Image 1 (cartoon, rainbow, N blue to C red):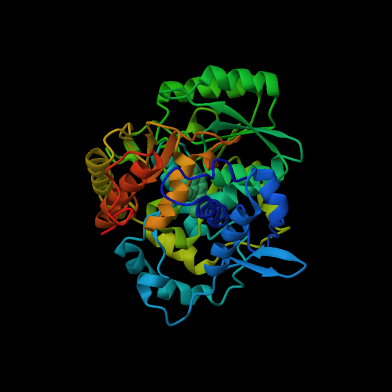
Image 2: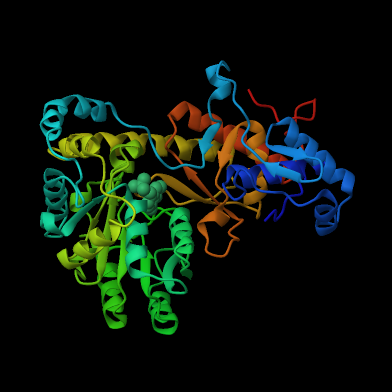
Length: 465
Ligand SMILES: Cc1ncc(COP(=O)(O)O)c(C=O)c1O
């Protein structure tokens, strides 16, 4: 799990090892309560001295990240944050690991606007297995406006797109089943597939667009039970499949009769145009096999925790029935808020697109100034840049970036089989001044990681102003 943990910068080996463990913890791969290997055992496995491991453990103990008991070894734990710590200290570092913007003020306005409707709902029982009717109607209208005629019966409201995928996996893929995915793909989708005990089968994305012939081959040779694809501002590459590609993909899926989950979480984030003028939804090319999942998280706010599934009424019925085993519907208040936002969605969506186009511009400028050797294509939409680094330093960069208060998601997380160390996903969802500062710090760290001289301060530390 530690991979390339050794720093080539100015840290000692023990600090590098501690940083590697810290990354695994922040990355969720070592949850709190995990028992760490004994010092002697780890030293032997890594080919280092026992003192080096013991010093690394000391550093982690000082940070409050592990606790050790004589006789029972060391366990990971969460550091306690004093309630009276200043806000700055308690606050998270600059987060370039999460591609999600805060809400626009219009979301707060919608909250105020639905109070009367909420009072009416209070007299009902509040269990809405399929979702609030007015919301299902408005989401159906949005699909219809985008070119996929939809009735409210074909919409199931969920607690986000991720929940939607988990529901589909539960209903349609069992242990040992293969699920076709793009490589790279959205990291949490891989987690969901694995936790359903299914096996992700990756189709690598070529330098541009999609390898649809590769999809065809995998569908024929690996006979996956299901496919999962993001054809609208793909996370993490930002690509969009054009109408001709969708037509071709639909024909391939039809031949193999493989159902596909199309994740439209980012579809409204067309930063250079209007999604109403974009290629029609994948579902309009193959209504029988396509199950569309969508979300309010990126267009409006992740804290609403609302998404949806659009499929045939028969599949929606099946999914609603299987959902009952583990949850009984989404919160009514948030659904009213989202229904309000979708009563006239254009103004706020336009504002969101303009906001993200501006931060994309800031990120591009900052990278060109501070990281001129990193290459990327400016994506037409979505929330992040997919950068190619001049050397395979992605994981080491993610570890070292913590020391300057920047969180990164190593690209290996977006891959079914690890690797991708030459790549980095950089979301542009932080406010503009923080984005520039984060890139400036990253440039300093990258110079240290690659061993370029002249970037360290006289004290041997990375200068962080
Ligand atoms: C492609 C994709 N799908 C799903 C999600 C999760 O969405 P939600 O917050 O609606 O669960 C994200 C969030 O980053 C995403 O990028």
